[in-house]
Length: 335
Image 1 (spheres, one colour):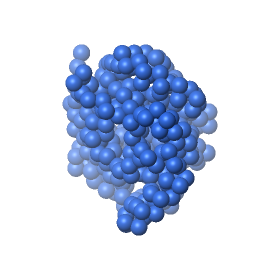
Image 2 (image 1 turned 30 degrees about the horizontal axis):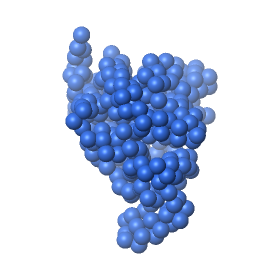
Image 3 (image 1 turned 45 degrees about the vertical axis):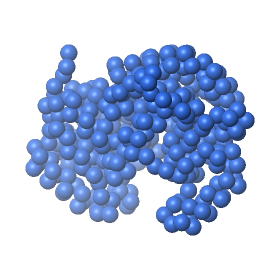
C-alpha cells in the first residue's frame, strides 16, 4: 500500500548538510506527498535572528511539522530550538551526527516531540540521563542511490574505491595506506577521492601533494584531491568492484554510505559496526572486516570471486530498495 501523507514539512539543516543530503531528502519526502521547505541555518547571525526567520517561514508556508536534522548549536553555544519555537509547532529531531556533549542537553531536549538518531548510543544515553525516549533510525539511502541498479552492461574498471574525507583522520589513512600497498603489489586499480589537502592556491596543491607523498608513499599513487557531486558518486560506485566503507571513530552504527553504496547493487566491504535490529547479514547483503588483515584477505577473495561478489551486491540492493531507504525513514517519522 502506498501512503500519501500530504504535510507541509520544514527541515532545519546547515550549509554543510544541505549540499550533501538536501536533494535526497526532498525527493524522498515528495514521494510521500509532502511539501518540503529546507531552512538552512546561518551561523553568522544570532540564534535569536534565525529563530525569528524560522517562525516567519512556519507562518508563511503553513508548516505542519519541523524536522531538525541535528540538535543545532550556534558558535556561542546557544542551542537553536527554544520554548518559543516548540510552543508554535511540532518539533522533531533526527540526529545525523553523534551527540558529543550529552551532559548539556537538559534545558531543551524535552522540547522535541520525537527524537531519532542514527547512533544507538545516543538513544541509550538520552534515556539514561534525561529519561527521554528516542528511536534508533539510521541514515538510509536517498532515491537517486537506488533508482538505477547496476546491470551486466555497466563497466567495472575500478578494483577498489573509497570516497570521503581522509585528511586528519588517522584511522582512514592507516587502512587506505595498507590497502594501497596491496594494490601496488597485486597491480590492482585503486582510486581514492576526497578532501586530502588544501587546494585553494597552486602552492597549496603542490606542497600538499609532496607532503602527502612523503608520508603515504603507496596511497599517494591512487588519490585524487577531488570532491564529487552525489550524481557523480553514484557513477563511481557502479564502476567499482569493491567499495570500501571506513567509519569515523565514535560512530558505532552503520553510516549512510553503507546503504548508498548497496542501493544500486554495488558491493560494499565495511568495517564492522553494531547492526542493532537491522536485518543485514554479512556475506549475504554486504561484507565486513575487523582489522587490516581481514580486510586484505577479503579484498583478494572478492576480486577473485566475481559471481559471489555480484550475488551479495544484488541482495544488498534489494534490501535497500525494499526497506532501508529515506522514503521508509520519513514515512516512519511523519506517520
